[in-house]
Figure 1 (cartoon, rainbow, N blue to C red):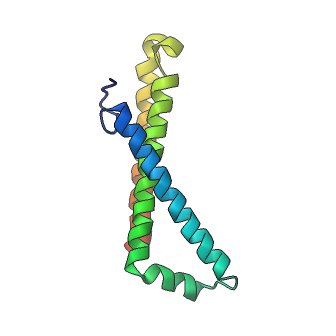
Figure 2: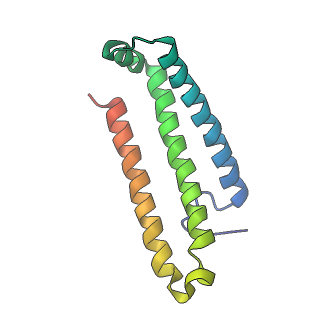
Amino acid sequence: MVTNITNLSRSGLYDWMLQRLSAIILAAYTLFIGGYVLMNPGLDFQQWSGLFDQTWVRVFTLLAILSIAAHSWVGMWTIATDYLNARAFGERSVLIRFPFQLICFVAVFSYIVWGIQILWGN
């Protein structure tokens, strides 16, 4: 079992399940938004704004934002541990992997904050 401080849930199985669940949520959200756009060919700002004024759409969008954050974090953590390891970089692997994961964390955190600000801000 992999245990690492940057691992999301301390278990590969749980990370795998989280990534699959987040993929399902993202697929449902994509189908919903895509269907809404296709069903409203003359979509204007008022309709779009009216859609996102509904609380359930905001909650669904927030769930999609959190899902994409979790999905991307698990994916980038997997890339970091699979490819930025001691076999590839020797003793320097920590000097490469930690900044990579830090940059990924800052980006994901920033996207979450920015998404919440756009979604629930005035």
